[in-house]
Length: 181
Ligand SMILES: CSCCC(=O)/C(O)=C/O
Ligand SMILES: [Fe+2]
Ligand code: NI
Image (tube, rainbow, N blue to C red; front, side, top):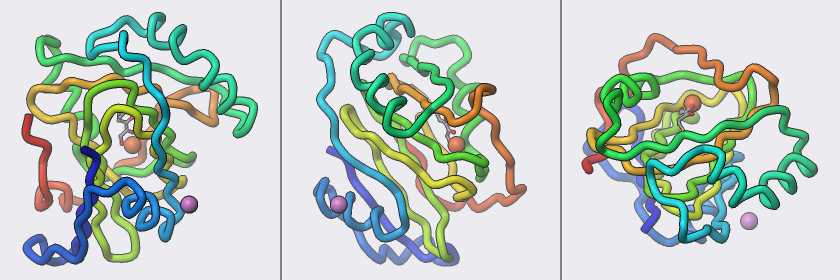
């Protein structure tokens, strides 16, 4: 089940709001300009699946998003707990960063924890299979796949170079929840 937890950025102990209802998550994130919705998924795709199989299974959805939003590139992250570089890959996204474009991610399988830092609040969003999340450009955030990752996500980019992150240098991510898996 997808879930949201909201805290003040200076108080990790006081939960301001929590829900595992998709409509509540959609509405809370909508208040800060974040798109969050559920899409149909193909049961045949599991963590570790090859990128070309994932892209082939979701060609229609991807083409629709490209036609709607004009994305210029895409890739697939597909990891299971046996991945030899799982610790390095986890670390790559664990510190607060921004992108100069919207961060559009479609969870084809598995789960991951996105944390957004907006207006002195922390929004922890547990994304699961079928969730599409789009975090606006320049929003500080981080992502935890957990010590034993299991997810497949399609990433869509507005620039031809793909993933480019600007790290804020803040250690705030160390004070909030990690994904346990
Ligand atoms: C869920 S896709 C991998 C994470 C990622 O691309 C990113 O930018 C996290 O902030
Ligand atoms: Fe990011
Ligand atoms: Ni709405």
